[in-house]
Image 1 (cartoon, rainbow, N blue to C red):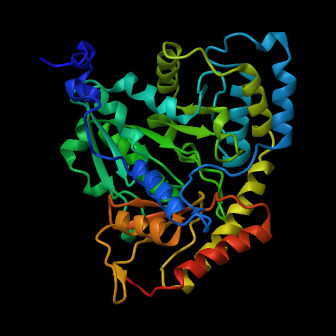
Image 2: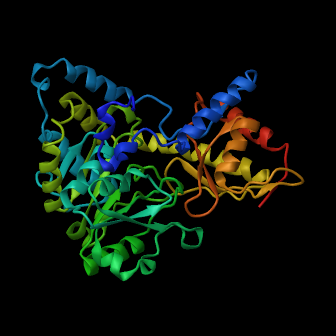
Image 3: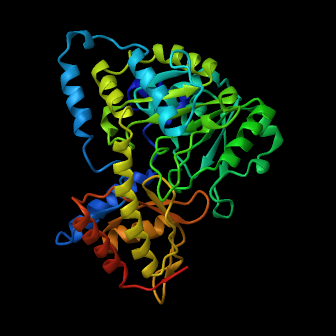
Length: 413
């Protein structure tokens, strides 16, 4: 006789079926959380430096907040937004023109808002994936890109991002049978976690690959406007033929410090945008109109993003220098707030590290520095320059403390 509720027998296979909740495997981020709690308990006198958090460390711009406050008081904004307001769509299309030089976007038929990119990534596969269909995604990467394909009975093919290919997928390495069965291909640049940027040449190659194999490209672009050192923001949609084969997903979370506001947009191929809009309409009732209008203010002031990018660029410079001075081989990315660094094999005369996760756990427990490990395509750890610091002086102090803690050992690569 079992004491289990009958509900245990009813879970869908996509989330584990009758074994739902019984899996003892610990998710990577849960391991990090537990290690941080243990380190703080063991060393309460030492401040933990959290370089793993992948979200902005500051409030949204005052003008955005003021617009929200004003618009939230207006009775006409209280109702359902459904598939969005025309003002937001127009602002998104203009933003693509102003920042990315994408001239051919029709605001009415080729743009729609999303309640952050994550829900859009959940909705899009429902428009295209049948059991047995294939989605191509890159690893390391955001796991959610493949989750809903699997939920729908599809298959995910992972193609690695390797340093020798500048962390761009090698399209020629994708098996022909996979390419012919694939319906969706997700890419993400500037990339999480590698920080790599795409090139016009790569995007042009991707457009051709999509046309040859009848694939829809989904460019996940939340970091697209966060670029450094003369690197210009690059949109997939700026490439000739791109709108014929795909869409691009933009978010105000990272580029405008609006993570919790949950607002972004899908733009590109009108048929894909229409399908997304129809499916979205059966999933949500739209983001609060006042938030959309606050986002319009942000999209009309891209200089806000430039100021944020300047801060991240400065922090990257300091962190790269500090890590290299203690033996790492760090290279400043051209975009995003992530720094992707090869993990050492061990400490000279001491502990060895089989994986990036081993080294990340060591950093948390022994150095009280939190990072995120990635072992999908080599042994790497990811630093995020979104750490808490109020101004340049505090930033300098944090980086100096990281260097001091890492200087105690000699690392072997």
